Amino acid sequence: MLLTETRAAEQLREEGYTVLRGVLDVEKDIQPLIDEYDVVLNDLIERLYAEGKLPHKYEGMGIIDRLSQFVADHGDDYFDHLSNYVNFSDPSPDRPMYLHPQMFNLLRSPRLLDAIEQFIGDEIAVSPLHITRIKPPENALSEKVQRSPNGMISKTLWHQDLWAFQTDADETDALTVWVPMVPADEENGCLLVVPGTHKPGELAVHCKPTEDRPNFKGIPDEIVPEERVTLPADPGDLVILNKLTQHSSLMNVSDRLRWSYDLRYQPIGQPVGQAGRPAWIARSRSQPEREMTDFEDWRVMWRNIMARESKEGVEDHTRFSLNSPLCY
Image 1 (cartoon, one colour):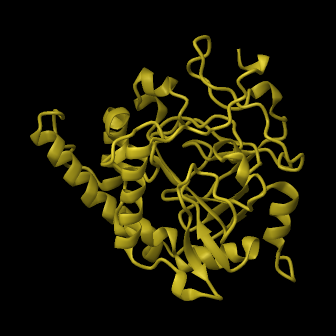
Image 2 (cartoon, rainbow, N blue to C red):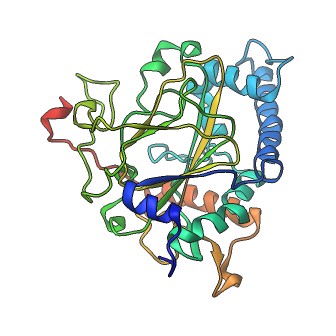
């Protein structure tokens, strides 16, 4: 903690969340990534169409509408190509991942790093646990996707982020930085948090999908406190969450896309809790030469992770409450 605590740091400490308005530069941080997605999505659609896997090319649309329609129609099959999350269950060494320069640039944006120094100091590592969420209108999704509990394309259910860390990272000062790429509001599915739920310092009951409840994963709604706060946010804003704060998203009942990233940061040297996947240094005031500054180094790091996991194997370490009667 800094010698002088900021108001945002105080709110994060007391309530488990805070919203920083207008931190990112939309033209420098957000728009380049949107433009990059336009190219990457176009290449993916062209390839799939040439292979006979798509009936048309989604022509005549801007990038936001095209991305929304493609994910609504085919996200269940091809979302990994657009996602910066690597599933633990896929052992392929060449599994798809969104490994492109502007994604790397967002992760190490100097404006983002400046903002989170007030929470974790100026020796900042990027956790390998980051998640892309591209959520078309719910009524545009197939029934299968609507029922899926993964929360990357459809509604995100109640959870605490510590659920996705191994126990060695229980004391790590991991910070979730939620970045909207388009306006997020109550209609298209902004975040919902319960203030103060980080204070008990415990992982709540987190259920695994079961035969009886195949479409549910996370904290049962009946044990989530009633004081729930919506967090609308615009591009340029950052929503900061404690790893134990209970949160979810509203359903996208609008006719607009909701697109965001869950990025995670922690002080250098603290346990990562991601099954051997390393954190990498985005900022070090004391040893700036240790910072990862080259996109190619980041890309190679992830390809090496995938190759190692393909050879050695890796088990999903998410912490489900397997014996809780609330889950059945």
